[in-house]
Structures are given as C-alpha cells and as structure tokens.
Image (cartoon, rainbow, N blue to C red):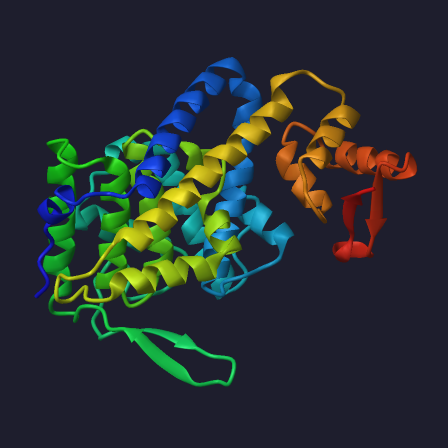
Length: 347
C-alpha cells in the first residue's frame, strides 16, 4: 500500500511561483486581522453570505441543487428539507456550522472525520454515513458524447481505514513539530484524502469542509468571510485538472502534488483579495447610493443584482434595487434582460 511520507515533501525545492503564493497569503492574512479589529460588526455580515454561498456551491459541484430562496432558508434554519437534495444541503450546513464554531476543538483524526461525515447525512437515512467505503469507488469523467472514462482508481475499501489514520498521523506530526509550512501541508493532506476517496459518497464535499477546518486551525480564517467553495465552483475544471495532474503516480509514491498545491493556494489568495475589496466598501460610512456605485465600479463586464448584494452586505435588498435603478436612470449603468436574466454593466 502507498505510504505517506511528508519528509520527501519537506526536502523539496519549491519554485518562486509557489513561494510567492505563500508570502502573499501571509501578507493578506495579516491585513485581514487588522481589518477585523477596525470594523468587526460590518464584517460579521459577510459571514452569513459566505455560509450560504459555501453551502450552495459545494453541493452544486456534485449536482445537489435547490432554488436560491430555499438555500437561504435552509442555511438560516428557517425551513425543513423537502427532498433528498435539500437533506444533503442541510447536512452540509450543519457540518460547516460546527467547523465555524468549534474548529479548535476538532482534532484531525479518522474518528472525528467519520463523525463529521455522519453529520453530513444527519437528515437522511444513509447506512454508510460515518463509515469508510464498503465497495471500490472510481474517479471518472463523462464526456459530451456520453462515454465515461476512469481517471483514477482510489484505494480499496480494505486499505482505507489504515490510510486515513496514516495521513492524519503524518499531518499532525509535521504541523505539531513545525516541520512543514501549513500552506503546503494542508493541500497535500486534501490531495491524499481525495486519492484515498474514503467514503462511498460525499468525498468531494468532505474534502472542501476539511480544507476550511485545516485552514482555520492554522490561523487562516478567510473562508469565514469569503466562500472558498464558491471560488472552486466558479472554475471547477481547473480544480479537476490540478487534481488529475497531481494524482499521476500516486499509488507508487511518485506523484507530484505541486499542481494541486498551487491551485489551492491561488484559490485561497483570490479569496483574501476578495475580502479586501469587500472591506473597502464598509471601511467608510457612505450612503447606499455611494456604496452601490463603488461596488459597480469594482465590477468588470456584466454583473447582477446578487453580485452587488454580496459586495454590500450591510445594505438591504430594497436599498440595492433602488440604488441600481437610480444609477440606470442617471445613465451610469445600463440594464438588460428580464427577471432572473437581468444584468447590468457600466456605460
């Protein structure tokens, strides 16, 4: 069976691109700490938006969907699930909530990962919840002409429990002894987790929840305010490509995790920069009109009312709608489309 050895990674020479990502993330994380001390109340409003986006996006990547209204109601605990998709969405909400509130009390062990997986299926009757896989699974792709190809064969069910213990033990050792930069150790752990593919179902969603958990435990809290899952969903083929490139030779221990490390670091950095943009909108007290105008100026190309709402969490829906309407009347913005297909762009 594949052995997990962070020592090989520890001695690796990293290129300037990867090191640049790490330096930039630490710089942005430092700025975020400063911002949080300045305007904590306004920034708390970003938390609820991020929870909704994370829950919606991570499930949508796996084809688990409902309406935007229902997502919001489910995440805010204002309704009960109506079908299987909504039951899975509610489970994701529950796990994400636990990570937000108790990340420092969730050790990285197989037992805790199994418990989180069980909570993911709390709202449905899934006998495999909280248990490692019982049948061999495969990572495959379905192409436009309908044919399916197996891209990667994960570990067998028999090998999985030991492998899950192994990646947890190795991760805890290198983090505990400060042997490896956390921003390298975290993507490596997630990459190995996805190659093991420990569950019959829910591997992708668990990997994204664990990414948030590991980042929080290492002091990187951007996912609390900006949805990493939404960033991944936006360019999910880059995610799949990076994962596929890093899986080559994994069973033999000759894999190169660098493509996946760079992908995840670039996603984290993009989220930090989004956070900075949103902070700029709450940094100074402005009228609703001025806040929406500034948000619109930050957008390139077409954007929707929802895009502006995300940038302006302190404003009500009616304030955003009224400001957009006035900006259109004044000729600063142009509006096209109808209903949900409505979009705006700068004139």
